[in-house]
Length: 213
Image (cartoon, rainbow, N blue to C red; front, side):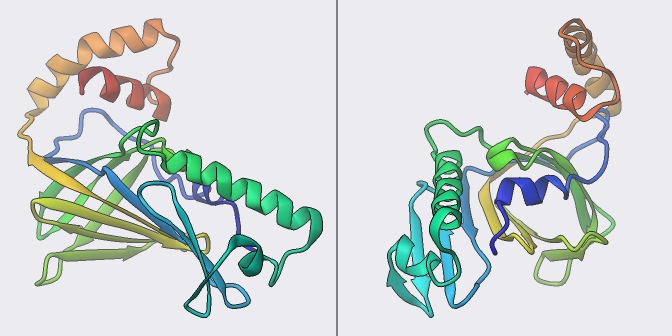
């Protein structure tokens, strides 16, 4: 059975994050799509507008025709509701745009995805070496595969048992020295502590990033 995307990806939240990292690029990933795994010939895709498209063996069908291949009764009703919730999460008028902060060095990429879309949470992206075409790929111990390609735009793909999430969007160069980061984050850190966030936690880091963005 398909796993609820948000629940599954939460397992893949990776490492703690330091707001003092020195980033070279900032990418706004404003286009997002999702492709489910194939079960009993059925798969579905949610596009950037939140529209869900269902297929059986590459033939367009409706949700019931597709999902009833492996779900019945209350399970079918419950899963259709989960898909509707996912579609709401893709709605461009209400979703927060994921932000990718990147470091480019030693022939590869590393960085941070700051994101709340689909309950995925924010996480660090470990160092990935680029190939000659500028593509980078890494398979993590937890089974998550990350694909990344950067030019004027970023294309980030997260692939696992939950299916595939694709995010794309424009990048801009940023040159932030350690000193300037410290100067910019001090007031934000103070404010986040006043709001009750604990320093060193992911929520604290996200609070600081939001205030200095």
